[in-house]
Length: 292
Image (cartoon, rainbow, N blue to C red):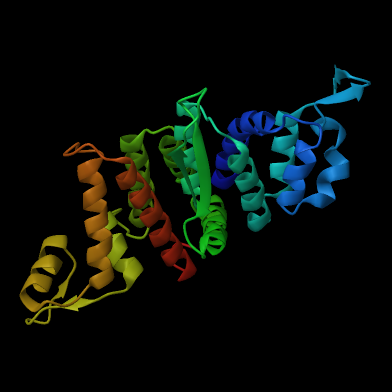
């Protein structure tokens, strides 16, 4: 099964190719985009397929080999292991596009967020077309490439040790990209719950969390506390203890309330936050040898 990153990237490339073709109007445009993105080494390889027409005197003859959508996909796949190169290439395309269909913009924005980029737009004045925008692609943070490495580690660990949870994780990614935010939360919760259930002999996710954090709470009668209610009561009374446990359990409760129990309608921001938190918590566990 392909990794979640490859699935997200493939869906992004398939939409992006359409707008790459829009950005190529003149014979030299494809070459200029590649050179501006620092990809001059690919110019000769794709020159023919990125040339829309040839001049025959004053006549333009269409180039039957011109295939910008296919080339865009190929280039992206070729450079996707180099996150900086990929980001530069995507940015050059968005810098040259003035109109992205609303449905495409929504999907692109969501998928790019998952891999660490923010796509924004600002309306610009145009005498002939009101629906015209300038697009900006930026990395969320300087650590975006390191985060992608951590997510690749997470995927590898799930494939090796928790293959039964992998479909839920991939589905959560797909849900977010398709603006299905409640389903994204539900599947994130399923991954989260399933992971911690495996850490307890009775399949109790909360006790699995306690085992994962390694925290021990002992009350005044020298009794070790293991139930959610008793641990939280201890914290309320003493203002200390089980810090990671409380965070993880509270997160599970929030995902249940916004997702499965339908207490509120989750927003796009809710879904992305909990998807990322699920990833980060599992990465923390796995990097500490828990469940791996």
